[in-house]
Length: 130
Image 1: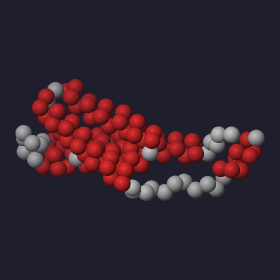
Image 2: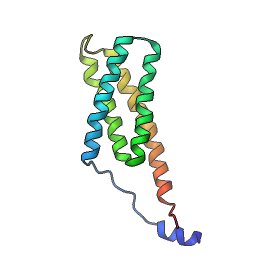
Image 3: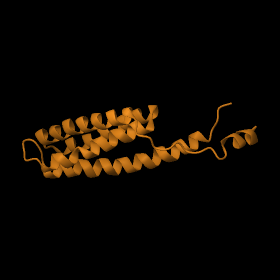
Image 4: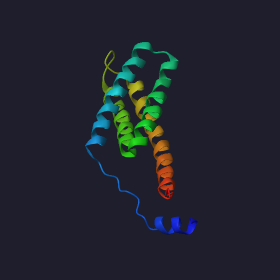
């Protein structure tokens, strides 16, 4: 039985990265969520509020990526990219530190999640339910 499963999965190509309309929508949603999060941090300026970036990136990305991993990537890219324009605006509309902190933190989390999902999807793709 295990030989049959191995024969079916050997040589199966990994799906290529395709940007579809869903990925673009999730980029915009991630951008908006990130902007709201950065305004929240700017208004409160408390240490614990900086941790909200971790919770608003990891949890939604994992949930979105369970449906379609490329949509999860789009959400994270949008979240990270929102930090760049935010860093160039003056308070009360933006902040240099918060913008680049959001970009760097989100990009780092994106890389970690990308490696996890890439490895997990490759190993999950090799398992065929009988």
